[in-house]
Image 1 (cartoon, helix red, strand yellow):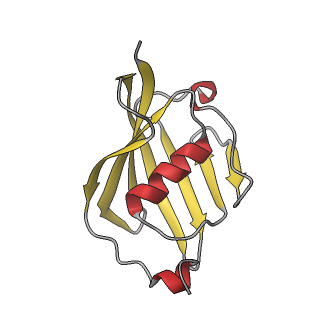
Image 2 (tube, rainbow, N blue to C red; image 1 turned 30 degrees about the vertical axis):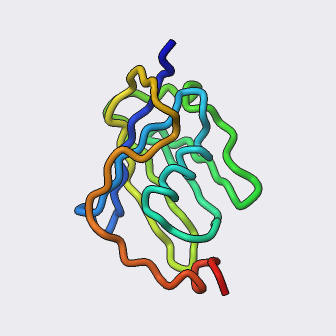
Length: 130
């Protein structure tokens, strides 16, 4: 049986040409969306973050305290928008759009597409190796 997947397009707010597309299962959480975007944009370290939905709902997470809200319970539909902020050494803001909600037989979450290269600070400055 296929799982339902939410397909998200995420773009850096200050560089709309840099985007990633990820798929996350409907039974997975906003913390899983954050993790998928972390993998997709290849940032190092674990930082506080927040999601803001179009309807004004806000959810905040921190290392060790993820947002345990299942996507299926949010009522998201294709075309809905979210804002995702990551409070790292620099603040990163992502404009996130739900592209589709569809059946998916592949492991979730996963990165579907990457466009544009991101220039991050060296790992040592981002909580990586010293």
